[in-house]
Length: 123
Image (cartoon, rainbow, N blue to C red; front, side, top):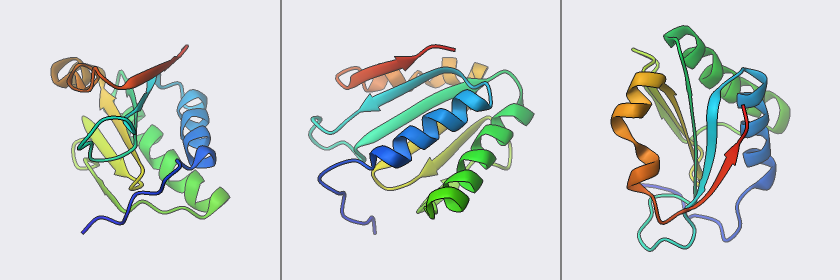
């Protein structure tokens, strides 16, 4: 069972996730604010990709390690480290998606949530 979503996002967690992605050279970082979408599974998606499985793994691993070490936040759930094509890290209010470039193109998550408010971060 999922924890109750908070009324406001954890700006600190969101900011840290994006900074870690930028530090690890993630490509096409996008934040989707889903808070105004009825029935959304979470409040925020943060999506990025990399060109190798090694880099996908490194980005996701650093997000988990740095958030735990620096602000004491552990994920509720994570998956995808077995093949490192699409790693999902669930922080309840924020769900992080780190894709291999080809997998991101195939799944097109941004298109599925086109009604969300979108913030794009330059590479």
